[in-house]
Every structure is written in C-alpha cells, then in structure tokens.
Length: 518
Image 1 (cartoon, rainbow, N blue to C red):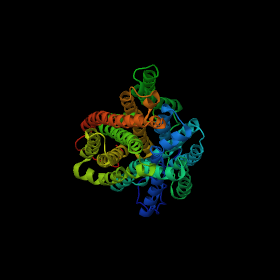
Image 2: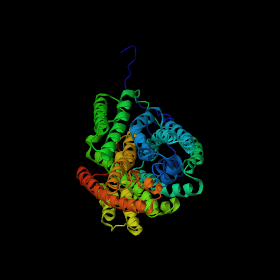
Image 3: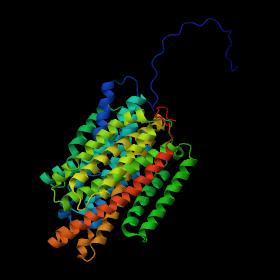
Image 4: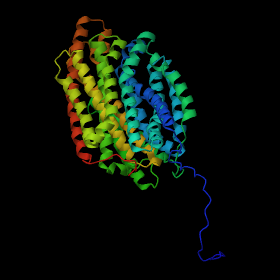
C-alpha cells in the first residue's frame, strides 16, 4: 500500500549494534556511580538543612528580637509562623513547576532567592521588614523543598537504596528543625539575632555552586502547561485555611477566623474539582483515594505539628521560666535532634521488620508518649522531664516522617515525583506552621487566662511580663506559662492520639513500599 513494495520474509541479516538510547526526561541518566549518587544527596541535604532550620531557628532568638524590634504579640507569632504557612501554601505549585520546567532549575533558583532573602531579613530594622524577609525565605524554600525529594526519586532508582536515601533526607529535615534552636542560640548570644540569617549566606553560595556542577536536570516533556488558575486556588486555599485555624484558636469565633476558614475550604474544593477535570493536573488529587497515601500525608502533618509546637514552646520555657541563655536553651534541645536522627535512620529497618503500618503507628505513638510525659510532669516542670519529652518526640518524628515519605514517593511514577514531594513538604511545613499557630495560640490563651488580675501588658506574653521589671508579676507569669504548658500538652495528646488511630486504620496491614509508582 501507498507505493511500498511487499517482499516475502527471508533470512534475517545480522543487525548492527544500536547506539545507546537517551534516557527519558523523567528518569535518571544511566551511569551514575554510587559515589556521585550520594554526593548529589549531600548537596540536596545541605539545602534542606537550612530550609528546615529556618522554621525553628528564631525560637531562641525571639527574646533578643523582641528587645530590639519591639514587635507586638501578633507580630511575634507571625515572625515565627509566617515562614511555614507561606512555604506550605506554595509547595503544590512549585512541585508542578519543577515537573514541567526542570527540578534542578527550580532548586538552584530557589536557593539563590533563599540567600537573597536571608540578607533582607538579617538587615531588618522593623518587624514589617523581618516578616517580609521571612515571606521571601518561604518562597525560596518552597522552590527548594519539593525539588529535593523529587530528585531523590529520580536519582535513586533501586527501592532499597532509595528508602535509605529517604531516611537520610528525613533525618536531615527533622534534625534541621531540632537543631535550629541550638544553632540560633549560639549565634544570637555571640552576634545578635541577625546572625541567624547571615549564617545562611555562605552555605547558599557553596551549595548552589555544587548543585550546578553535580546535579542533572529532570523534567517531563509530556506535561502540559502549568494550570495557573489551579495554582492560585491552591495557594489561597492553604494559606487562608491555616489563617482561619490560627485565628479561631487564638480569638474564638470572630469575623476573620470563620471567614478565612470558609474561604480556604471553598478554594481547596474548587482546586480539587478543577484538578479532577484536567488531563494533566497540577496535583493528582485521586492519589488521596489511596488510603496509605492519605495516611502518610496525615502522619507527616501531625509529626511536624507536634515537634514544631514543642520546640517553640519549650525554647521559650527554657529562657523565660528557667532563665537559660539562648545558647544554653539551644544545647538543651539537642536530645530532639539526636533522637530524630536515630529514628529516621532506623525507620527503613523497622519497615522491613514490622511493616509500614506498624512503623508509622510506632512513630506517632512516640509523639503521644512525649506529650503525655509533659502533661503528667509535676509543676513546676524540670528539665529532666523535658529531656525525656524531647527524646520521645524526636524518635517518633524521625520514624513517622521517614516512613511517610517512603510511602508518598512510591505512590507516583518518576515523572510526577514533584507531586509526591509537594504533598510531603506541604504536610511538613504546614505541620510546623500550624503547630506554632494552633498549639501556640492555645498556650497563649491558657496563659492569659491564668494571668487575670495582673497588668494587661503582662497578660499578652511572658516576654511582655519580663519587660515590666516587677519580680512578683514575673513570678506569676512563669507559673502561668508552666501551667499553660500542661494544658497544651493534654490538648496535644488528644489530637495526636486521634490521628494515630486514624492513620493506623487507613494503612493496609501488608502495605509494601515499591518503586513502581502505582
């Protein structure tokens, strides 16, 4: 047909050797040596360490920062948690951008912005400038974080090696959040609070240079154009939902809280509906029909909510209630970092020995145990109890985060790895932000309730009470802060225990992490 001559089949001539075919855009190029794979992981983890540290590094710097910039109580909370909320709101969009236009490009560009934002924050002369710098840091971090996990999915094609790499990644993510107060404490005490941002700059320069040299580019040419309407809906939905939860927790039912909560729910519902109708969604929301995928996202959210809030409140407790210096407070949070490292690196072994479901339940149970110890500790609380709490929270966080990340990454094909990274990191950062916003606001309300009868300024925060210079008021504030910590711990026990039961019910008993993406 069509002028093509037909010939009877005959003996097959030997075929010349075919040249090697180029890899598809969604898979790693062949020939990566083991040394190069792990060198690339080191570059990714260096960036992740800074982004994770910035979620908590200001916890111990807050007293020094308050003395210098004099932010009010609401500005204090926003200085701490705007980073996590904005970062979490952008991750779905940046994950989609990385899938389409290149994960290395997104990673390097985001880290350059992160360095520039660090300079802006370090030179802040007002609370508004510092909050603005934290917003830009969040945008840069949102470009970096989904790139790290999606690049791991592409670089490590063997499921066992990839699970170990994810364990290292998770240990850096969790330990970064945990050592943030330690690094911040040393820097603040020696050089002032701005040093908590200046420290980022040399690491950014070195990591960008190494990333440009070592990292290969990954993108999927099969993706369509980015859904910008969906991107706006996801950003608005996540941020306003978090804003609504924050204000409901702090102020109860008032105009702004319920309105923001409703707007967030509506925006996310419209986003989900739009994604279901598109052939190439920004986020395949059908993934949440998979029970294990939903459970993994919930486990990540809860693990970071718990440890984010605990590190924030306990850092303030150490400095205001017990009078530790920033570096002394930072050193005393070290058990959480070490325990997170142990938990993350033991998670692959636990998944093989007791299964994914049991490992995830074990990690979340560690968080419940930590808050239970804090709730039951006698008042005034002493540091030995807090050390046990930090160890329990660190172990639980490391196991839960690593197990959840392995489940999320195995659920998608390599060309959509950015989506898995986006879901994992959105849960991670929203957990930190909501932990500070929700549990921090509950603690603030419980503190204010116990400070009834004291000067109005002292009722705002323990930092304001200290600035009054009245020993009796400060003693009352320390007692109120400690008692509020017990109340917040009981609330945390209830929240985390409920989610633990739910997650355990969602994960199939014999669920196995694979590399198929199905």
